[in-house]
Image (cartoon, rainbow, N blue to C red; front, side):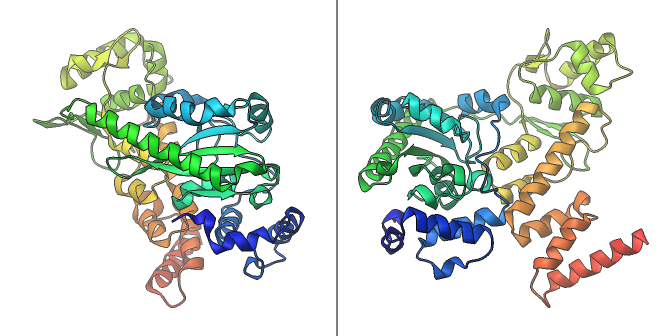
Length: 420
């Protein structure tokens, strides 16, 4: 369904920019109920979500995550279709005062191209490659809200939640994997008021269809390969394991540490750097070389190169499964794969940092989801059982008289008793 053509549009058309801005000011200050305004329902709901997730209406998108941008671009499924997008949209945008953006499914801007003057102006609100323009990160905006709803839409000027974006209008259409139907990103056209027109929506929609068709042809022409069954298991209390098509073997903690660290450093690690990440005091280069020799005998010499030490081919792991689900914003899948902390027995400083980052990211994603069922699954994990703040959230939001609320009350009482 074309959400941008609902009756809510006609009601919103009666609101001038100044009137809509006044509604926005009253809403963010808690003085108006949006149900009593002629604001489009999809915009009103998005404003509510933006406010609930803590988006600051005085700020643009969060700072650019440049460290991972190149890797995201290289591996993203929309990368092969970039020439199609440039041919259909970017080429005509270079002197039209508009910006073309391609986003990942989590709202990260991958490519931002078009009219140079417009691009420089957009930089002032951090509408640049690598920035998070999800609805959770930047509030109501066309690409972020289109991804949140998985629906094509247009956002006009003061319908944006962030004040710094209200001088722009934009049109965005989601893009899906043609084989699986999974949402993989969105295409956005940002500019002046002319961008929020039926003609622009039709153009961006046609581009998204062309992109999906192009990806389908590429998939059809790809040679069939047999996926490897090699896999690393490093989450939870069980011993780390190395799985192959023929066997499963238990790894030493040190060998598991090395494989995880090499997986997080595809550029490679020198012996000195690896020694520091494994143990910042007691390891030397000779010990590292001996450990690498033993590890090659366990998993095969064709997996690890030296000078620097690096993986010669990717190794799948439950750690990567969780990381990918977090990146996609799929919290249910995150908790399906997250069976516990990363290598909880490891004393490696490098692993300790990754362990803390992953645990905090999972916890944060669960809380941001606002889903009590997902929160309950987090609290069932070993690291969640004594998470007093999360038990308090569950108690505050569970239905009165429900078993979930009663359990949260009991758990809080037990935690308070321990602290007494």
